[in-house]
Amino acid sequence: MQEIDINQQTPHKSAYTVSMDPVLNPYSPGAGNTPRALVGRDADLQAFDIAVKRIALGRHDRSVIVSGLRGVGKTVLLREYGRIAEREGWIHEHVEAREDVDFVRVVAELVRRAILRLSATKRLAAHASRAAGALKAFQIRWNLPDGGDLTLRADPLMGTADSGLLDRDLASLFNETGQLARGYDCGVLLTVDEMQFLPKDHFTDFIMGLHEVSQLNLPIMVAGAGLPSLLSAAGDARSYAERLFDFRTVGRLSSETSAAALTEPAEIEGVTWSTGALSRIIELTGGYPYFLQEFGKQAWFAAPGPDEITEQDVEVAVPLATDQLDSGFFRVRFDRTTDAERAYLEAMARVGGTEVASGAVANAMGKTTTGVAQTRDALIRRGLCYSPRHGVIAFTVPMFDQYLRRRTEWA
Ligand SMILES: Nc1ncnc2c1ncn2[C@@H]1O[C@H](COP(=O)(O)OP(=O)(O)O)[C@@H](O)[C@H]1O
Ligand SMILES: [Mg+2]
Image 1 (cartoon, helix red, strand yellow):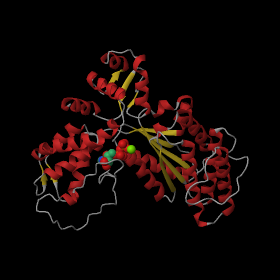
Image 2 (cartoon, helix red, strand yellow):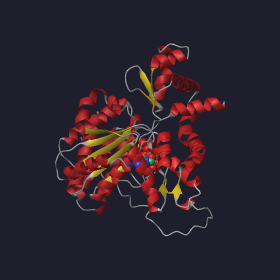
Image 3 (tube, protein in one colour):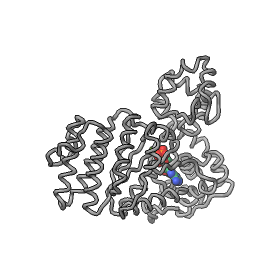
């Protein structure tokens, strides 16, 4: 188990008459919320820790890409990676890719922030202005604004990062940034969340650019996170991607770690879980971290206590937790869909199962596969579905089929 130093135990006197103090509720459902007990990820954290230390020593190691369904803890893991790098004295800059934001611009911004922080000490001014000059040249070539609150004072370093070939220019940019970091005896970690939103060609250019600098053993690393389709999205750059990245899949927690996710935070507050309560929640949530946090939170609220959560409390919590998930986690995805997309998702739920054949979905809609291909592609592009294999489609949100069935029952 990884110790988290936030939410340190604080003396707290409750103003509430109920026995289980709602103020002390230790569960944290919500995108990117660091859990009180980060369980089941020791191997991922250790591998990253080793890679950072190796790269800091000028040894070769891989960057990392974490993939998995929604709500399994990818963002939380990226944050932990950031903490690990910072503990080694590295600079960490984070960005979340979005469907509607130009990735070239995003990378330039990321690099700009890293250079600014590296050069904040004003030592090694020559190095810093070289990296800044490369960024200027990149910005001019790629028509990017010299934006931000803090601008870099430097003349464009013509002939660097301005060839017009994105992979080459990114390589130059990463190279100059890595050299700068090395000059400071420091390293740079760039974390990119929601990586599935990178347009395919940008993703491959990004891989190629990073691959080029990775051979120079500079202290620059990328940690990316995204939906399960990321490796296949690497396309032509796939073999480079495999060498460049440690691809790590995160998913549901085992029964044992699921139990730990619930009991460890409670223990700090002097509260225990009955065995029956634990197995019921694990059964209901399938060990998916987001659901564990939501069910844990509602069970805590429902329990009269004073210091135990029972199976009965869990039963009271089930409709509350389901309602919270339906109106939040599930609904935010569903609300952004068109009528055609909803019809497709509902047909997937009718066919049933976690993965379904695209042909079966089209059939259930009374249409041909090509007739619904556009809708299917749109759902993939927008991150609601992914294709685990050719001709197969799956939800990126765990238990989304159950949500859709609940919806149609109400309708
Ligand atoms: N290893 C873990 N153990 C316990 N809870 C976790 C773990 N990882 C994530 N969570 C919880 O799961 C939820 C989703 O985490 P998040 O990182 O946002 O997932 P993702 O980025 O994969 O959608 C959060 O409420 C978080 O507190
Ligand atoms: Mg996330």
